[in-house]
Amino acid sequence: MADPLDDGPAEVPPDGTDPVGVAPVDERDDRARALERERDDFKDRWLRKTAEFDNYRKRIERERREQADQAVVDLLSELLLVVDDFDRALTVDAGDGAAAYRKGVELIHAKLYDLLRKQGVRPIDALGADFDPNIHQAVIQEVSPDHREGEVIGELQKGYTLNDRLLRPTMVKVAKA
Image (cartoon, rainbow, N blue to C red; front, side, top):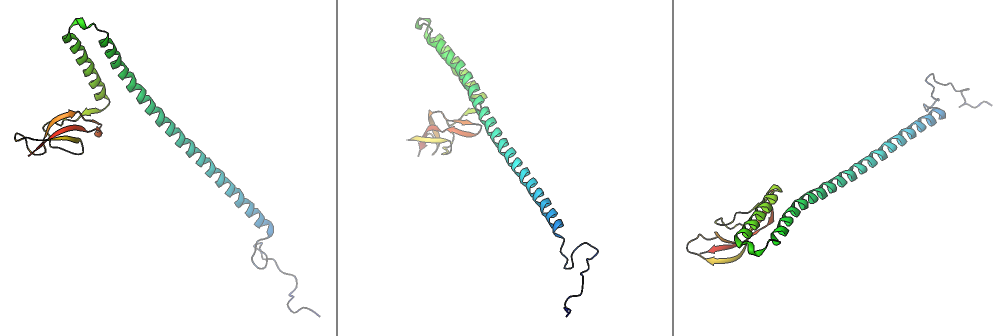
């Protein structure tokens, strides 16, 4: 007896798919291999870019450290010139006179301040200014009818900034009413 569901040999549609619209196994395998190659290519490129970025980051960090080290070397080289001047001043015979010795120390002092100024260090001018806790450290308060309340009337230790950044506050004496 013939099977009523059997229509005979299945016809293959002209587009190459089987009767239910699924591509043949060989085409699917080829497509899967192509996708795997594409995935592997993307993964390889991603790994290379990650390694390149890591190397870039390490190089930038190394260059930054080298620049900082070189800045320290440059500054210390200039400071050593001032140390040399102090060494020469200390070898001067005391019999040469206090005025000449003082003049030498003043020259060394000026040279050191010039070096600091070239590096961006600036002294804070506090005397006569209003007390500012951001740049002043009050260590003494003194009653003074000649000055206004909160006015800086004395500097006990000079304060400094480096390119507008506080290095050390000025220790000050402040007027009190």
